[in-house]
Image (cartoon, rainbow, N blue to C red; front, top):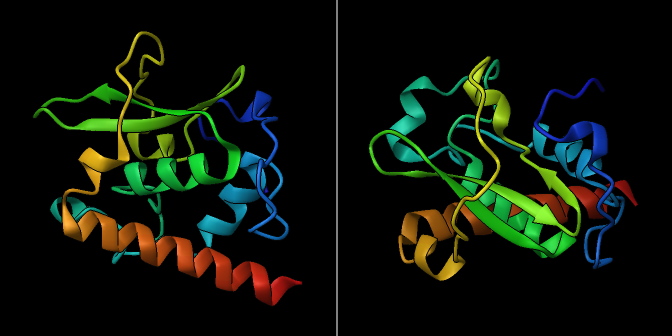
Length: 146
């Protein structure tokens, strides 16, 4: 698979858990999630614009926190117009954003951004439910592939 997400060239972070069989690198996770991301996992405010051609739209926080579960590290957020944060991951020296493609050619700044806490993001019940759905679907997919 060709990769276009931010940091793909150096996304060599290694999984810190074996809970997700077959997921060893961010590229592995991207491959798996590309088959799972859907309108339901998209943020409700963005669902109208979601399509299979833009699978990463509205998937950032739930994806970044799932990637944190797998690779460790920290989730950071880029402040967007309207006051929302676009989430991405830093694991060791590896900076990657599995959902950056949703912004097309827009260049985002991945430096000096605030940490994002799952407790804050998952205070929204719908977001926590979307995260749980994504996590469970990934577990199911990984179990089927073994």
